[in-house]
Image (cartoon, helix red, strand yellow):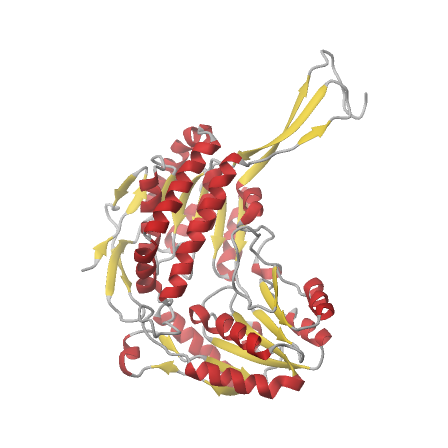
Length: 493
């Protein structure tokens, strides 16, 4: 049986009075999982008001106490990891082993940020004047709107939530319409861990309806968004005149560079995982494969063989390698780009290129792992984010050309190079225009203790995870204590 989800506002699970209910279905089977409210702007306003009311007390709560709640939440997540992972797979489709990793990220970031409750270090700085003391401390921003996507429906909310909460902010979470169950389960864990009423609020519904309120409301101090570049630009344009702080994690067109000296067995493992993991629905997915011409034929042969062996199916089946894409709209979008690659770009299709409709696959949204070759850097399939199991092979003649091609997009999130030459590796490390660079590994696999984010149109300069996340969710305050007993004028006296 399906369930009816509710908003979580001011510590209470509530249904909006007039909202219609939307359906949440399993993308592998079409099964109805839940109904959830299409909340209205007034509901978002109520959630923001609850967060504002809770802010003074939460800000005054000692940071170590805030950390204890986050630590307890991580402990609960650990105990429920398997149940949460299965729920996640049913809701958005990724295979179960990946879903477990999604939950584990929430566990890890929770423990990491819980420790920041005792580690929010400022600085003491020597003054240029006698009998004067200076130090810095972090202060929270206030109410923060968190707008999160469906592809990591527990991990990404946890990245944002834990960093915001440990600094004393209160939050309103608006998850993607495709994954309301995962968001509700995560908030339930925080509630059980002892989060005070109003500190965390969950509002379910459509971004087109709720987004403007969550971005422009005068009581919202900051917005943290992960999603498409187009939506991120819209959010930025709405928030900028109001001088609100905004962090944007947006698109990617990530590349793996394979040099002629690469360990091809290792490289193929990384390519397959990066291109087809999560059905290619990661902002860090490798959708471009930049290969030295000397090994091009060998890489093509091996990659096609590997791609054709991947088994599509329900992510709960242990035999499945690639699950469905998240919904019918995304399935149509992927196929449209494949047709562009064939008909407009005139790239050569090596395998895949079609919607999978045989047997039980017809019940869901499955796309065959797809490989193009003879792709030029200017082609649409080499420039635009497809967000599906589609990879384009671009041949190059040198390391320098490979780096130039890799940098030749408007995005700059993740990149990778396979080579056994340390000099080549460092050349690429310094010159690749990306926020993440891997050597002899795929383009995916971020860790919670390092900054996550990209350059160019991938983001707006802020980072998630690690210490960098605290820089977004907090303000620095400089404090001066003059104990001289007289007026001292800096730079004058």
